[in-house]
Length: 283
Image 1 (tube, rainbow, N blue to C red):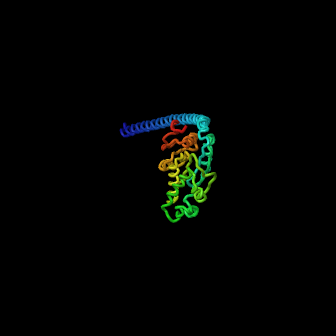
Image 2: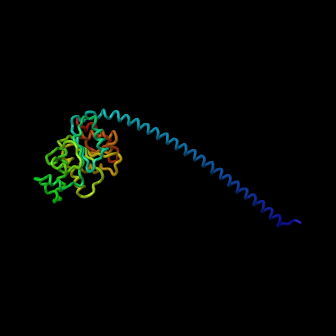
Image 3: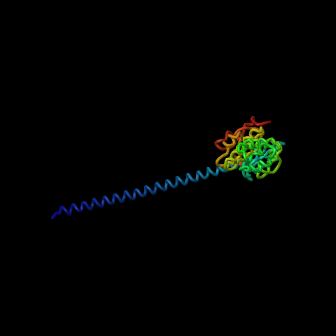
């Protein structure tokens, strides 16, 4: 006898099997699709990485060629450009041997002489300076705060032009020194870390402003990696600047700035140009 319930159950089982098979087929198909897409993506990314590595290698080779070219040509541009000129180097704080070496390297083919190198004592020893300045208005420096900035400004002027007072107080003013403080033809100024304390800040500012006011070309310098940059600080004190002394172009810019070219030179966003226009330099 025909059993409708048995027949319905059989149909349901068939439909269930079809549904399961369909779902399994879709799942397998999806996995294969995802796997294929992933393989294509990985191959594409690997190709992009290879292309970027090749491009980076090409750019490194190009930079090396440009550096070799600059290293060969720029010494020719600066040769004898400062012939017979006396250049001073002053650190506003601790001396930085690497910077001193780079300044010497930059002057090597120019015919210039590094007349002196000194590091300003910060904060200044006001009592010792006052003792050495006996007989001048600055003998009261230890007790009269208002004298510090005028004194430091005068020292900045005399670092460029020479003078009896800077010679007298030099042992207290500078923590290290070599050379002679006679009149110079250009001054390189190096600011290190921002000064700590009112006396240190006031002395550093006034020294730099006095150097700029002396009429001697005065140039603030720093390395390409110096952070925060001191270029704005130099500009506010009236100094020209070079922001990449550790680059060949930076040392060339220093030479031209010591000739009297004014501005901010280098690679950083604050720079006005890599090098000054040739027409702006002294003959």
